[in-house]
Length: 153
Length: 223
Image 1 (cartoon, rainbow over the protein chains, first blue to last red):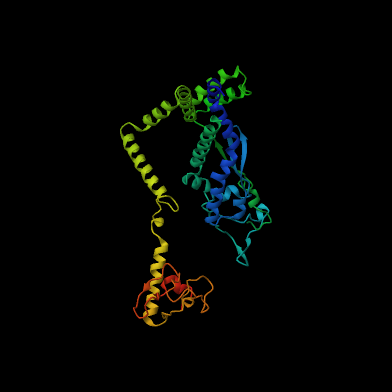
Image 2 (cartoon, rainbow over the protein chains, first blue to last red):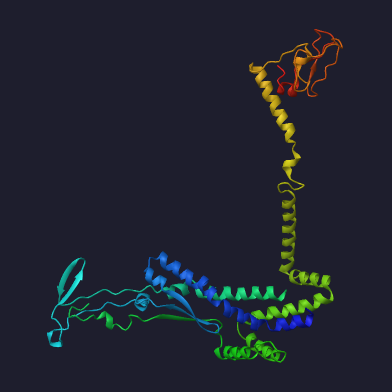
């Protein structure tokens, strides 16, 4: 390869780097975002079904999505507040009393007040732990390393 | 859960909602990135005409975070050209340029010191020319130890030294020895024995070489 060809090759480096990043983004995301999130959740004793439901989807050039399609994904992630349950009442086509099974017994009540749940907030935790920043750092490092290897050929 | 036969949980709109967190790489200025992607899509195939587009895309990328990749590329172009003209001079200049200024000089000195340290460590490693263990002659040390051991055994009576005029019993004649040793040459016959043996002239029987046996003699069962 003569100098002219080498220069042409170097000029196309950014294009090829971005292509490389696009090809490798899923691998890097799994290594730097998905696996750490799973480990973090396992260490915190979160729901295994929720942990297993995480995946990465490719949504376009240099774009992707961190997806969790667990049935209660939204509730578990962001939590819910305390709420009240009242019977519908006979006038509205329901019953006047609530009947529910709790701790092995049937209970009857006019009103219940289930507690809320603060949520896993795992995305916030992942951001606080710097998983996303590290992903970007590592993939740019990887692209640089790949460029240096390719240039010397 | 309501008791009226109606499952209120199923009415919660948050149930079954898929969690989607979008991740985008290079999001500094979306218009620029889109422009760049368009240029890249146009220049696919790397034809000769496509290079201008790439150069334009390069300019856009320069203004984004990806500019780091480009500066690296430009440095390499310069290095390649100077390397082609004068390889040795280029290497030296690159080295000095990096290290000769300000704190760089200190770094250079530090690197030199590290190099010397590494060299010394390498030479004194196991099996290397300066390996200190090979400066000691283990053979001598073992012999000295055995000597001391035998002396101690003799002193305590666990081992005895037998002096005899029968050469065959002294050992030193090889593996086979005994009292059938050929003495035809006479009593003054010089009996060849181990070089390590220490000859002792007791003066009791003139002309007969006596020996405590020496280390090798004892080792061969000269008792």
